[in-house]
Amino acid sequence: MASANTDYYELLGVARDADSEEIKKAFRRKARECHPDVSNAPDAEEKFKELNAAYDVLSDPNKRRQYDQFGTVGTNGGFGGSYDDIFGGGGVAFDLSDLFSSFFGGVSGRSAGVTLEGRDMAMQLSITLEEAATGIEREIRYDRLAPCDECDATGSADKSAPTKCPTCGGSGQTVGYRQTLFGTMQTATPCATCGGTGTHIANPCHECEGSGRVIDRETFTLEIPAGIADGQTIRKRDAGEAGIRGARSGDLIFTIHVSAHDRFERQGANLHARLPISITEAALGMTKKVEGLLEPVEVVVPAGSQTKDRVRVKGAGMPQLHKEGQRGDLIFYLDVMVPKKVSPKAEELLRQLSAELGDSPTSDADELASKSGIGEKLRGWKQGVEDFKDWISGY
Image (cartoon, rainbow, N blue to C red; front, top):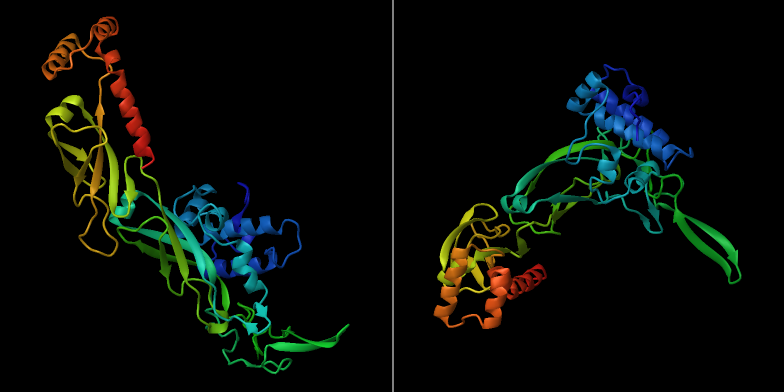
């Protein structure tokens, strides 16, 4: 990565007053020179990382203004940022050499010709459960092989149509013969002159070198719908790698990862959560207002509730994807909490309750209570709570 003393303008070979178009063209030119796929220099990969970092800053007006003023740029979230943000830590699921190999190599040949269409590209995007519930817009910035503006993606400087390759006659293959133990074998390989396309560009575009596509940075706003689930994908048509000489572009595919929540567990459109209540609330019942995922909800706890009982709040769960106004339920698992310490008055009231219910403590329990207090007597109740916690964590 570029050091703090690296001059980004010098790295790209442009003046400090260069406009955005000059910076873009300088980046493309330098990329072709120092990319690891075409350069044998041992530090080619590191130089390309520095080049990409310089372009990331100088191609963004806000970052460039900050760089010009302070000589550095602070990190920011999202998909912009450094080389590592775009091609590594930021979540893009394709390799740098994979992205540009076909650009520097011309076209990818195969025995039956070539694939002119652009390849799909993939990104990973993490969001919170709240963002999944409300839906969110994210600004996406990424590099791709885009149609060349200079030649209108034709690959020709004068935008003329390609002609039939003189070497292979338009087949995209050349036939060779070799002697083997079994006689003469015929082999077909992609034509080296046209790269397997079967066509020839007489006057190649200087910007794209005849491929009809160039490295470019794209920016757009991605809409993530409410109710999306972990692992689901969003496809943006024709935003992937551009095809060769005007062929169809691939798609850009986002895989959405919904981060785990500290209170709620999601299953489909339903949400599950633990709700601690006191022993009196469990015995007498109550209506309690608690925070849901998006808004406060009222939970009605019936009298006589027990630990692990479930209480359902309809329509307070996750929105259902592409079903406006429809939501799942919020299901609370009751956890009756036993106090560790009680006041003398509370202890006396609990003893009266125990007598009223016919489960008066035995003499051994009285002796224990007199020494340790009512909290020790209720230790067995606490074990039940711990069992519940283990149960709900594995639900």
